[in-house]
Image (tube, rainbow, N blue to C red):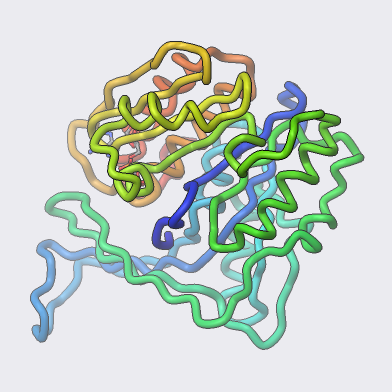
Length: 302
Ligand code: ADP
């Protein structure tokens, strides 16, 4: 997990509908050190925890896990630091069937780490993220992905601070897709934009319906915006279409909301990538994310 990007939470460009082709998730992988507590700690106290877990985290890496669990061939692309956590992160990707074939391995750099306080009483997660010097992915790194091989059906880009590089990547993919759109801001170049609740709130929206209603105007012709909103569910809108909404599907007990948004994105991508309607994709996203909130981690989705 890491703090929300100030701009878009994620973007995706669909090229070719084929469930045997790879979904590529581009963004961050980090180590999550999760401290499970039965009550939120008070400052300057010494509290025992119920458990401490290591998990692979990062928005794009979490989304990749769930896409792979749902059965999509999946690849993660992001910078990896050589060091004590590399093997853990690579092995975990392998266990989820997520390829890391084209990730740049960087010397003299430290992997980002999130310490996450998971309150078992509420399922809430409080994130303390550190990234001292792992650099963002560059356009040059992205060019190692063999787009011309035709083995990718979907590219999902996490909106991170490398906006300039992302812009080059989006234009490059657009070029690859032989699109002839005129030049516009980033949102106007991709087919589907996911806006997280946190990013929508930073844009002063107070619910997902009004967020997609307004933000669809920035989409390209035929483009779509989707916005999940915690226990209120999610909404989506095609530029020229109606708003579609889904309620949340709350589990009996909310146990762990870490990566709920990433799970929603994965399930919605999975549905769209298999030809489902926007309404079905938004509903499926809420169903899978809701189920995820009722379990520790996401392996129970398998
Ligand atoms: P994040 O905080 O991880 O960015 P959200 O809180 O917006 O993500 O949640 C994403 C999706 O997860 C929601 O659209 C919803 O479907 C599901 N979800 C999150 N919290 C709950 C909850 N308490 N009960 C049921 N579903 C939830």
